[in-house]
Image 1 (cartoon, rainbow, N blue to C red):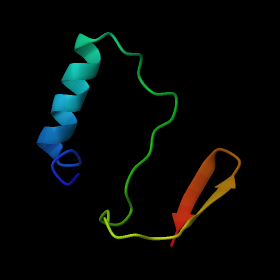
Image 2 (image 1 turned 45 degrees about the vertical axis):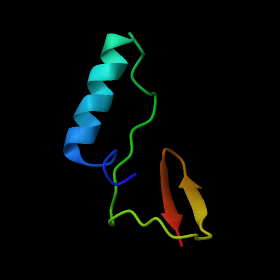
Image 3 (image 1 turned 120 degrees about the horizontal axis):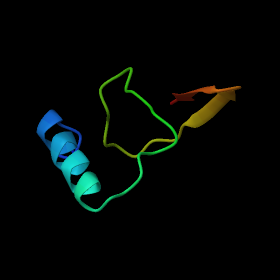
Image 4 (image 1 turned 90 degrees about the vertical axis):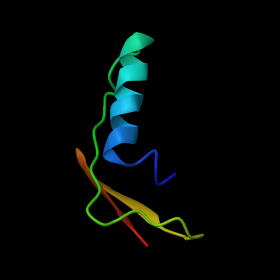
Length: 55
């Protein structure tokens, strides 16, 4: 998972998506904190076009 979220991993995923002619996603997101890979319970809070995740 960490490799997939790295800059090289993201570049490879973009290349593969373009090669397969996959449309870009309708939504975009960004990490505001480093991702964690523990078991967690969280909540997605939406406010119009914005959303955030709490844990």
